[in-house]
Length: 526
Image 1 (tube, rainbow, N blue to C red):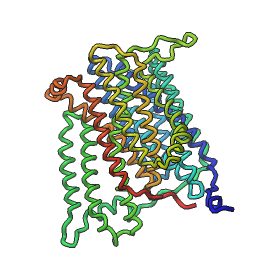
Image 2 (cartoon, rainbow, N blue to C red):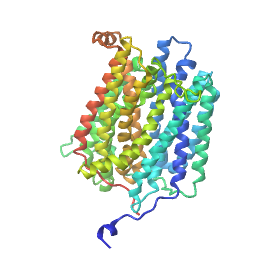
Image 3 (cartoon, rainbow, N blue to C red):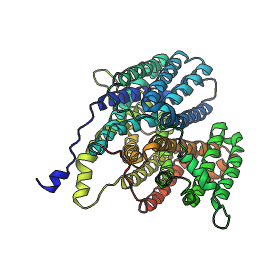
């Protein structure tokens, strides 16, 4: 037997994986079914009392506040999972909350107060389970079969897009036909199916128990590091954290323009950024008071958080395909062709089906063709290289969509088929960033911090949507609007080019940092 044959991994695919994959496919149909029609529903139904221009702005803000909630609540879900309930019970119980929200959603399309309550429960349930499901997938693997984890994470991401594709194709048609209650009832039913599938596999799963209260938890190590004086009694890291606190207070003062949610989140981001920098400066001072292994784990988390921060502009671009791009599409010419009397594209929101359809094609194309081709030429498509390249593609998609908006602002009516190119570029960026990010986040997290670190990965999406609210709030000022108008661009087109430049600058910083990042391996032992 050759050495290569002896070293070849022999582990098999865990038999419980199909339950998790099936659950994810149904849950994603449920989520994207309601999410992808939310903007159109708000504009066409719930906010009908406002002027049309006001409805579009308000709908966009409500949509991104919802997405902020969806990707903020993973912090709660990760904490509950790691400290108290474990991943399985957290996923199951929050799935029931999720089901309740979807049901309330479907039953209250004419009642704003009940509708927003349902929206909150969906954000809590879907967001709370998000980091747990990804980490739960990773828990089913060990060192003997970790070589199969990438394939499963890709399959996991593929099934997400399988559910999203059919939801994006059919649910907008139901809303367009004038049946808003049915448009939300179908996703509610699918969420019930998802919960049943997940429950059915309960006896097969690997259950990693939650960690008890830990004196060497990440937060305690951070506090120890900040409080510890240096040889001369100095605490530069603590002072940096204090600056973050002052910045947080200043951020709260922006709520009249940005809104309460954006102002609070901006304050949290300011505090986390400066406090995190302070911990980094003084982390070595925690040694001796905490085990070296835990201090090293804390440093690993901080290093990954820089990666996550640089990815946030990508998500500010990606999530606007369900708001800004849909609104643009509503002003474009829809195709008139039919298949056996059936009109495939009857609503601009259906263009979102392109995204998951392309994902399902690009993931196997990358794994079977493009990545092997690059490896044969000595170029290894590492996770960080893929993610940096993905941000660049997303930036290019917004350059294209901005050029289209300039053309439309000039009075030319464009066919909605023009959106195919930016969707293709954005989706290529997505498969290089999002699918890779799940695997990368899990592999870089110490065992007891996997749920929390994956929560921070979701928080990157929250911060990305925060940038959307900040930009939208900023351009409401009369002086800013006039300055944009003086450039010769419309406000919407200017914002599109701004987001493209923002993402490109982030990509350059990402590439610079990635070259200095040392990848680690935190998969559990067989």
